[in-house]
Length: 184
Image (tube, one colour):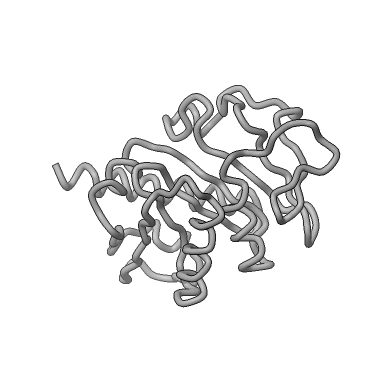
């Protein structure tokens, strides 16, 4: 609801997941309004994206969550948003360079605002398995990637748990809004 109220997940846009076990996650079901989520709007799925004991369909982008959980076993939650700022910036830029922001310290491995972080933007692809493979290749080459965007589509951010992932989304969305405002 918090993300919906801030305009970061309009209608059924976005999706959220949390690792349950080494090989499973809890993820939003397809077609759920993010401002009105109830407990039955989540389902368990394996890390191949197959629902476990549920007739409901997992989010269309489930494989992007699976890629992150497989890439780093310390990832405990993945949050995907569709804000105006991240959507507009991702349509304009191949990567978003963030520098000098105090909130950069909420990203992994950063202890000072006096740094520069590049958030990559990947071309949107309706073939989610192919997109996940592209992102996986990038992340293996750039393991310090703190988050990523899909052009015209939105942000993927993660953390060791839901709280840390939420803080990172909030920090990134704030910085993206600053970048968008300063580009006007």
